Length: 410
Image 1 (tube, one colour):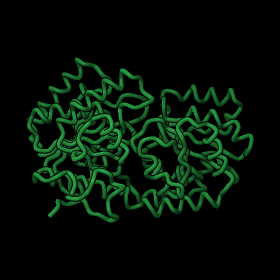
Image 2 (cartoon, one colour; image 1 turned 180 degrees about the horizontal axis):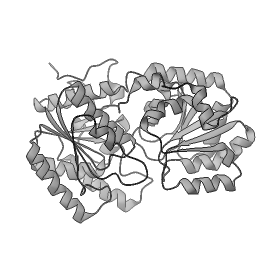
Image 3 (cartoon, one colour; image 1 turned 90 degrees about the vertical axis):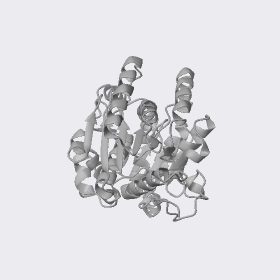
C-alpha cells in the first residue's frame, strides 16, 4: 500500500507525535510505502525532523504548507500537493489537523485518490474561539468532510462535536485513540529520585506537572491563579511546567510578582523521550487546557501511574474518571484549587488512582494498536467496505469490550 500523510508542522506536539508514530507504524510494522508531507516547523517548540528523516520513509518538506491562513500561500500549497499526489499515485491520503485537512483533502479528492482520510486531533472551532472564526472553520470543515471517505477522531468527543456542528455524517466517523510508546511510560528509563534531584525537588515536595506549550488556552494562567493559595496551605507543593513557548517570560514574571517563583519550575524545551521520566518524577499531572482533542499527557500520566486533574473539555472525560483523577468544569478556579489540595494531601489516593489508570489504559493507547486500527480502516475503504465493521456505531464507548477493528469485516 502507498500512503501519503499530510500535516502543516512537524513540531513537538501531540498531533505531530501521533502522525509520526502512525507513519512509523505503517512503514516498519506494516511494510507500506509512506510519504510524509509537512510544512516548515515554525515557533520555539522544537521539531521532529531529525527523527522523521532517520526512519527510512520519504519526508517531503513543503514551504507553502504553513499553519497560518494565507490565501495566496494556501492556493500554492494546494497546487503543490496536487502535483505531489499526482507524482506518487497513493492508495491513501491521510491528512492531520485542520489546515492540512482542508487543503490536503481538496488536493487528494481532485486527484481522485481511492481513499481520503482525515484525523481530527482537536477542533479548530469551539466556545473559546471568536464567533467569526467559528463560522469560517465550521463552513470549511463541512466542505472538506464532503471530500473525505473517512474521518478519524482521537476521542468520541471529537466526533460528537463535529456532528453537532453539521460536519460530516455519522457513517464517516471512526474513533482511534492516539497511540504512544506505552512501554517507555510503564517503565521510565531513569530512576525517579535522580530526575527529581535534577528538577530541584526535595523528598517532601509534592509536584504537579503540566506538559504543554507555554501558550494561550493551555491552562498555565489558571494554575498560577490558584498556586499562591495552594502553596500557602501546603508549602511542599511544587508546579513543574514542562515545555516552552512565547508566554514563558510572562509566566515567570507572574510567579515572581506573586512571590512563588521558588515553587514554579520551568524545564524549558525537552525531547519527547524525556516525558516518561519527567512524569515519573512528579506526583500528579494537572492539565487545565481549554482546547484539546484528547490531550496525550492525560493517558501518558495514567500509564506511568500518576493521577490527573483536567477540565471537562473534548475527550478528557474518556480517561479522567472518578477512579483516575479529578474532572472539573472549565475555568472553575475554586474546584481547581481544591482538586490540587486534595491530591497533594492524599498520597494513598494518588497511588490508587494512578494504579487504576495503568490497568485501564496501557493497551488502549499503544502505538501498535493505533497503527493496526488505521491499517484496518485503509483496507476496508479500498475494499469498498464501511468505515466501521458492521454493527458498530460511531461512539467507541458503546462498543463491546475487546472488539477487533484492525482487519476488514468478513
